[in-house]
Amino acid sequence: METYIRIAVQKKGRLSEDSLRLIRECGIRFNNGKGALKAKSEDFPMEFLFLRDDDIPGYVADGVADLGIIGENVAVEKGKNIEVIKELGFSKCRLSLAVPREVEYNGIKDLDGGHIATSYPVLLGKYLKEQGVSASIHEISGSVEIAPGIGLADAVCDIVSTGSTLLSNGLKEVESIFKSQAVMVATPGLSAEKKALLDKFLFRIDAVQRAKR
Ligand code: PRP
Ligand code: MG
Ligand code: ZN
Image 1 (tube, rainbow, N blue to C red):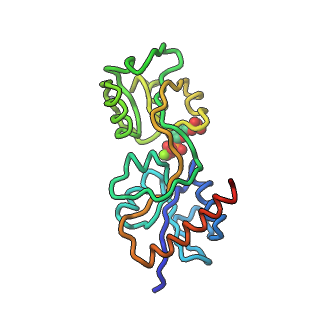
Image 2: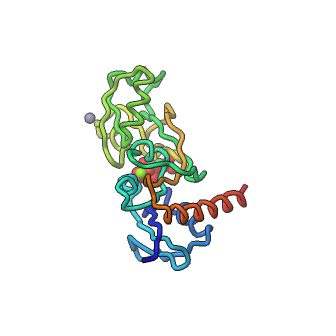
Image 3: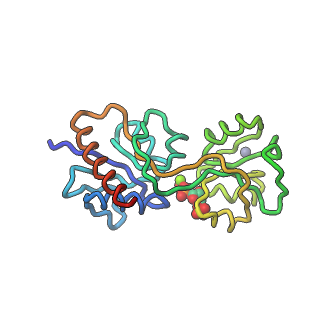
């Protein structure tokens, strides 16, 4: 059987379009129409899995996917048994703390004893510890920005890109705790054949990135 490399990319969302564009710019064509969750390239030995970004680290760690494109924030949060092999330079964003617009905020100590909703308990926990703040972290997997408005939390810690989600939920950004961008991750211990394909892929990515500089 022919060796091919399997890559997991985000199905829908901030990373999705840029990830697929990068792969196409590498001269790797595929068809991802009609909500297909799997596709194979005709001109490069590569198979695609279209998944929720938060699920990608698990698939890569298990070796179900050889590679994945995810946010660095997700790679750090759920990075057990995966390797970050390349910074991709797109989908830049930050992980920030935000509070309701009308709340007076004088510094991180204001959150001491408070309740913070987030999908990133590891990154947030580390930051709070560094700052010597003790707050209880309430983990929710999505629509985090709704939490203060329904009395679930005093603050949120979530990804901010344009800031429009915060704005439309009556929140203001008060601390930026982690800068993120898209990264390529890999399962540790790829076979020599797959490594050779990966090198070829990385070489093309370098060329694409250089052309853009
Ligand atoms: C993040 C975050 C906000 C949005 C912020 O979601 O949870 O919903 O992006 O972007 P903005 O500042 O431009 O409004 P993400 O793209 O990670 O999607 P997901 O939560 O569905 O994984
Ligand atoms: Mg996400
Ligand atoms: Zn809670």
